[in-house]
Image (cartoon, rainbow, N blue to C red; front, side):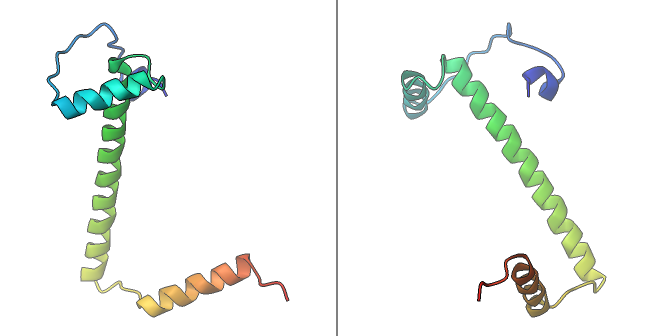
Length: 99
């Protein structure tokens, strides 16, 4: 997916100065030297995309936890042993043992 599709605009001509610790600069330099990335900018863009993905994932987890807490407060709980029994049954149906 392009940056345009993710962020709604293209800004490859935008410039920004970023100050890195020596350890982070070495990490960027090592990635470029490995040949996996063509420039420090590519490394930083990849890192920022991963950070954005992680933030979205965390928001989704928080939403699901809040939903679960709300259900629990309403008494909509399922016994853990029952859940595991159902899961084991489903697994057995999907992968019957060869006898």
